[in-house]
Structure formats: structure tokens, C-alpha cells
Length: 424
Image (cartoon, rainbow, N blue to C red; front, side, top):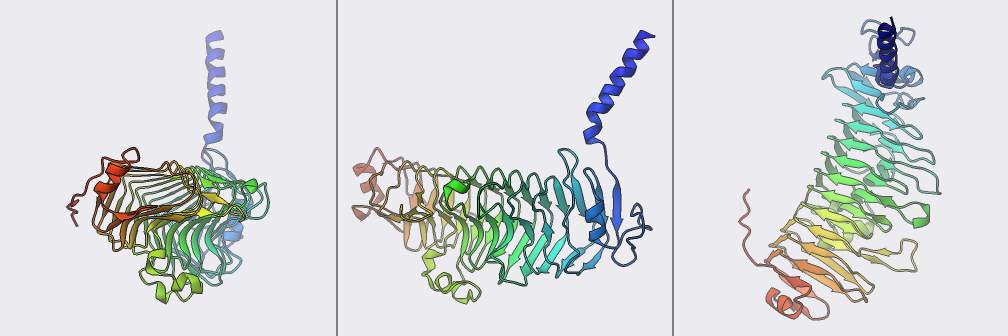
């Protein structure tokens, strides 16, 4: 009897310990044949609107949405509840059917919501943000995957907004945007925008086209309101023919940018009629693949082709965005056919940067143009293949690679000039 009771209690404890991960309820939406008076539990008794799902779903629940175009301005994803760890609230298309949200106020409003998963939809011509996580509350552990996003009706600055921009308090952490495709022909100005207190987020496996200002931007601003840290931008394809691919402004640090392919940034900037006059009319080399204005970021294993440059910047201490790009690590990248490979020009400090194991080949103006006139100049160029256009380094100007390695052996060593023999 004691053995039976012991076994019984062990089973009860096991069930209790597993209960947070038990499957929730599965519901269905059918915009053509459904009715919100139904229970939503079968395809035959499906709901009609997202509004019904929003107020019903709780942690662990999933709603599958049947094919069709859902076009009501007020019928979009805005869950009333959050999910929980191991028990996401999931909005997904039914099987491989095409589900389009067109003309809604937002694609998804996740302000103050966590553990929400959105899978497989097409968001077209929304009125405002595609994904909205601009909040003084917590929006964490949300997953957006396998979706398609195209343009919006108003001039919203960002398509996907992560973080807070007005005062301390909000946290937008541990969110993931995966395997999706983004097109910004005119609006939004930035496809994805990180703001204050957006940390530990993952942007991976996506394709970005356009962005009149930039495809991805980090805007921390005043560091007292929360830095942007520990985010990962990985395995994406970025093609922004209007202007900049990726812009990391001040107080955005310890982020990882790796394994991305960035091409053709600014290639068609003169026709960027939705951007600013400055963005449209800047010289070709200004339209960068990556622009860095914050310290201690890692840029590795990216391929950058036919863009303006990769630039490191220093912002004046008199500006609210004051910071520099010191201690940036740039390694194992490939630069080719850009206007300038690596470009730095500043009268302020820029130190502790490592440029190592990169290929710079066949740029139009400079392979490297490094013009740091401030006090911190302990920057290292090690084991790179630098072959093609000119190399310029303050204060000596344009010189050969051999000159730099013999004159500054502590900082410039092990570099070669070889044809990398690229394969198409």
C-alpha cells in the first residue's frame, strides 16, 4: 500500500511540474464562412474575426486562420493577454493557405504583451506599424516568423518598432524576427527600428528591400534612458537601393552583426523621392552598408558588395547622441566593389578598434580611409587582404600597404595584397 501511495504521489508531482507546458486550446478563424457566435473549436464552427480571438486566447492557445484577405481597419492582432514561458499564444495561418492582412490599423500591436507568436501571414499596406512594440511596459519573448511585409499608408518612421523612445521604464527584450521578407518602397522610413531598452533581440534569416532612410536602425539617444545592447542581426539579406543598410547610433553597444549579405545600398539614391533631400542627394559613398556610432560592437563574417562604405563615426560631446565607435571589432568580412571599404573621419577620439582577417578588394575610391585625429589612436589592422584601391591613414595620407606596415608595425601587420579569386 505504501508503495502504491508513493507511486501515486510521484505521478501527481510529475503532472503538476509539467502543467505549465500542457497544450492549450486550438481555435479557427474563417473570414468567409465563420461566425463569432460559434465556439471556434472546429473548421465548421470557426470564428469570423481576429477581434474574437484577441479577447479569447490565453497562454498556450493557438488560433489557425483560413485563407483570405482580412481588411478591417480595427480587425488586427492585438491580444488581450500574454502567453507564458513554454505556453505561447500563437496566431498562425492554416496549413499553407495564404492569409493577407490589408489596410488594418497595425499588423500586430504587442505593446505590453509577451510570449506571443505570429507565423506565416502577409501584411500589406497597413495604416501604421507592421509590428508595434513601442511601449513603456514590457514586450518580451515575442516571435514573428515566416511573414511578408509590404509598405504602409502613412509616413510612419518605422515598420517594426522595438523599444521605448520618451522616458525610462519600458523593456523590449528577447524578441525574435525570423525568416520574413520586408519591402519598403516609400513608407516606412526604417524597416526595423530599435529604441531605448531594446536588448537581447534576434533578427535572423530575413530579406530586406528598401527603406528610404535605412533598413535597420538602432536609436538609443540619451544613455540615461536605456542603451540598446546584446542584440543579434544574423544571416539576413539586405538590399536598400535608397540609402543605408544598417545604422548603429550612439549608446548602442555590444551588439553582434554577423553573416549578413548587404548589397547595392544607395545604388538608386537619386530616385529616393520618399526620403529626405539629404538622403537623396548625398554623394554615392555616403549611402553605407553599415554605419556605426556606438562602441563595443562586433561586425563579423558579413559580405558587403556595391555599397557606399562601412563607416565608424564619432558624435560631438555637445550633442545628445554623444558617443564614438571605439572598441569596435571588425573581422572575417568581405568588402568588394564598394565606393570605400572602411571609412572613418573624425576630429574626436577613436581607439581600441580591431580590423582583422578581412578581405578588402576592388573598391572604387579607397580600400581603407582612416582619418582619426583625436587622442586615442591604438587601432589595429592585422592579417587582412587589402588589394585594389588606395589606402589612406592620418596623418601621412595615401601610402602603400608596405609603408604602413613598416612605419606602424605595432598597429599594422600581417596584411597581404592578393587577388582573392572570388567565385560567382
